[in-house]
Amino acid sequence: MKEFIGRYIKTIDRFIIRKYLGTFVFTLGIFVVVTVVFDISEHLDNFLKNHSSLDEIIFKYYAGFIPFYINLLSPLINFLAVIFFTAKMANQTEIVPILSGKASFNRFLRPYFVCATLIFIVSLFANVYLIPYTNNLKISFENSHQFNGDDPTKSEVHIQLDKHTFVYVESFDNSIHTGYKFIMEKFNGDTLREKLLANSIVYDSLKRVWTLKGYTIKYVNGLKEKWVDSTNRSKDTVLDMRPVDFIHYDNVYTAMSTKDLNRNIVKEKVRGTGALKEMLYEKYRRFIYPLSSYVLTLIGVSMSSRKVRGGIGLPLGIGIFLCFAYIVIDRFALVFAVKGSMAPFLAVCMPNGIFGLVGLYLLAKAPK
Image 1: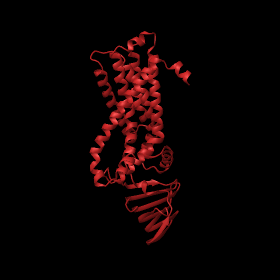
Image 2 (image 1 turned 90 degrees about the horizontal axis):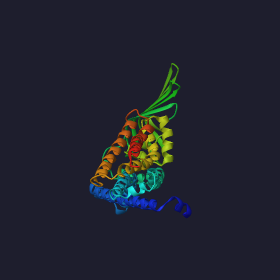
Image 3 (image 1 turned 30 degrees about the vertical axis):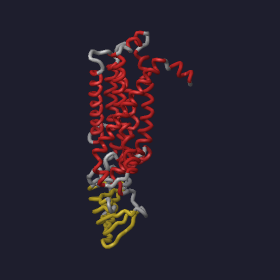
Image 4 (image 1 turned 45 degrees about the vertical axis):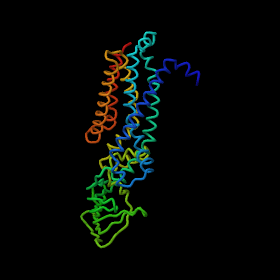
């Protein structure tokens, strides 16, 4: 291993890698500290009002908050770090001797992409395995302490339980796990065979069954209909749904493990509650978002490797502008995927695709 590193990682590579990772870690640490300070000032009233213990705040809320924002900001901080130290090298005329010594620009890019690969691997692991777990801690804390303040329950919910069974709930009270004006219809192809109407339906979390209260059932057999009136009775039944199906919290899918997310995608394809696009977007984003480390590194090096009048101010200013542009395009991609007609996979690829083309153009214009 030592011989391999000595053969392919030269002195100039170690110099650039040390500057790259050092600037990246230092800048990321500053941004995280500033973000935490602003978040504490914003949510201090929530912590005090809900009598949150210090252990809960540190080991639940901020144990989820900090990894989430490190993962979210790392590609952009990586971009700014690359621009900062590369522009500084160019301003001090350190890049010209490298390129003048018969080293191609592609060879100059090697240590940058070594670091980008390390960031990509860490980000991919975090997106697939770590962040869903820490997000679950954060979101559970926020929901239990009413950070959002809005009623998360859905109204007028339609769910398809299987190929033949459809249910409808007009309203749901999550505090007592009770739905009101419940309707369940069973079909044989396009023909209605059974229709159940109940005044309310209550979930028993111990028995994991639903209790129908004040229900009537209509059986249909061709032109014959049979009514069973049980308005004064209750009935326990097992249905493939849970109270969580009638509740929607922001970023709830980011708190699911990849395995659970895939399982819910399969179930959602049958149920059709309208959340499929959001689930698919979250799934694809976990694997594609880390690729931004390569795209933004390419743009950063190509843009800042030329010495310009005025020092590093201009490249850094352009870099900050491009960071905001990346965030805006990323947010628009989410809206296009969830609310529009764009396929979730294409929407996830859109930011990296657009900025990848920008990177290739800047690479062609970079000093050789």
